[in-house]
Length: 119
View 1: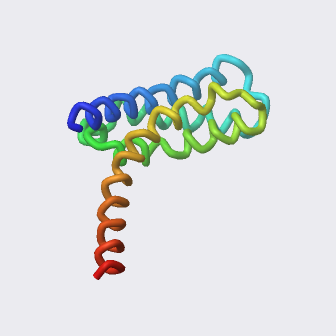
View 2: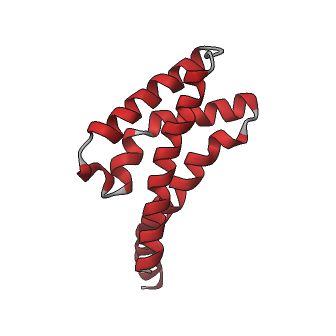
């Protein structure tokens, strides 16, 4: 289980860095609209987080994924609007780790509900 959690942590970090890299894809091209401009701005903020941020931010998925969530959302919106599914890559890389975090909590809730029903 420890290997699974550690691997998904690294995968989530790759997703965070991928969101910054995808954001700068629009910087070298001219942004076509406000959505692309917002993605470039969030990529710049993400790059500042990578360079100047605390190392403690990278310890837990909620540290870096929460700070980069605007870039994730904007990239996902672009993927839906333009059907560029590569923009969903960062979300796909971060979700397994968040799912593992929620799975343990959901399991405890289900056990509690089962014991309340059974008696």
